[in-house]
Length: 387
Image (cartoon, rainbow, N blue to C red; front, side):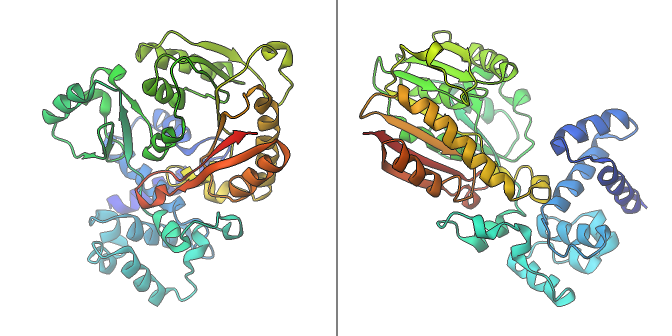
């Protein structure tokens, strides 16, 4: 039976996954080593594994098979052969709402507790609707793009000739089902950036003026810096990161977008950079801080079972150290844009209070961008002004 074979493949993947690398990278390697698996086999195996991890710690006393069946019931809206084989009575109810499905599971497993999907409740930011957040873990986030200004017509022409589902969010943002092969639909990658809608919303806090000097100090591959340049192409921009390899990705991404007028530096911001930056003064600094990434675990649900709470304190200390080393290069009256992709208050509201108390900053505004309401990542943003 195909379902039995799928279960065996799932169990073999879990047995071999060492949890020291992102699941998507492990699966890519696993599929290369098991070339007998066709594209449909790979797709089903990936679905089963990711859905299993979406359970977090729910009913952790059950067998892998039992938990996988529950995960498949929760995370799908269409009947499938796997569930039909192992639990046909649930497969017949696959189109019910998630809350109705939970009631059905509770009848069979009275110990079911939804809060076990995310076992770090004590650390959640206060603004989060806990139940809504927990339920979102069974819904795969969408794939979002940000259209470069002036390229909307080109993009829409490409989509008009393609037989795919999509949703226009605003004049620059479009959502697609996760896994959509955009490169086959929109050949010119310079016309858009793959960027989560919550990440796009952080750009509303930038507000650059012409000829401003800005620093994206933890730039990674440059998504927010490109958004900044799209708002105001005449700024003077410095981008930095401590990882030379990821800055190579940034350079490639900037070249695709036609951006060449910027400075780039490899900087370890846990160290004093006065020797390198002593003459720099900025009109704005973007600090997209290293963080737990807990607001993105809808995309990487394996992190829920791999994460240990002591890491929250480590990241919080790291964020404060970096902020301390960059804010001195910010002009008085100008903004530090503090961003995390975390749902933990220690990295968000409590961190901002700490920054304001110790680094002579004040809050212009702060908000939690509730991506769990929009099949997107959840981010935190604060626009802080240097006093």
